[in-house]
Amino acid sequence: MRILIANDDGIYSPGLAALAEVASRFGEVRIVAPDVEQSSMGHAITHSRPLAFRRTPLLRKFDAHRVNGTPADCVALGAFLWKDVDVVLSGINLGPNIGNGIWHSGTLAAAKQAALLGLRGIALSTPTGKAEPDFAKLDPWVERVLQLLLPETSLRLVNVNFPPNPTGMCWTRVSVRHYDGRVAPMADPYGREVYWLAVRPIEETERGTDRWALQRDHVSITPLQLDLTDHEALASASRRVQLDEPALADQRVPAPATGAVVSESEAEEEVAESEASAG
Ligand code: MN
Image (cartoon, rainbow, N blue to C red):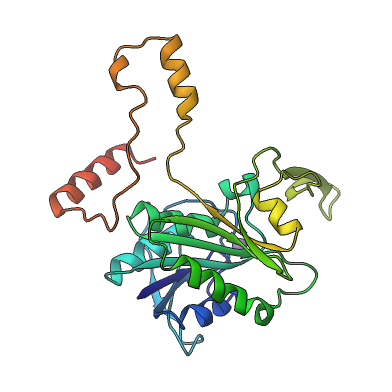
């Protein structure tokens, strides 16, 4: 099994090394990760400048490369340069990726990029306190998660979060009732007002969600999908307001096929299209 590993904390993150170590028990590992931290950069793709791809011997045990780009760039490039990737693992992120925060997660974006390419993507994260996470303690739990998820080929995109001291694992859904983002105004050293986009703690959690699992010291495993369409809203809107093509409404299209192969002519068309619509 060919396992491509990326992250958003950068190639020198201890979480990346911990994940590569566990993943190497399951197959052949290659690391392609950003050269500097790209946390909360979401699913950005670099299209206005070329990307560098540099071998990084610091991670001696692994075939590791750093890219001056985003987490999604790393997966796009990694999957292009290393054929027949079976699965992309992203993490282990230093910080949780739960609830509505997954919208700007770079860790999850790397896994999503895999799913967009017709590969499988698994994002793995853990909260950080005052100290660095204890990756030796998490090791058997990461192994258990990979043992469970790697053979489950029908799960194309999965978001996994590890509490600092796991006591069990559970399937969860995304906690979407609250958003933990906030703006913190403060003064710079010259007394001028500046703003820090920060996180506010959320106390209330709904049973069965990712946040709920972490609060109960359980590893949270959330299967995700690429389709953001609100199918109920679409059905209801198209019943209430007839537009020009009523027959087209609410026809669900499946996610990209497994290992979808794009022919060169199709790829060229897509490039032309994306160039036309870039920006
Ligand atoms: Mn991060």
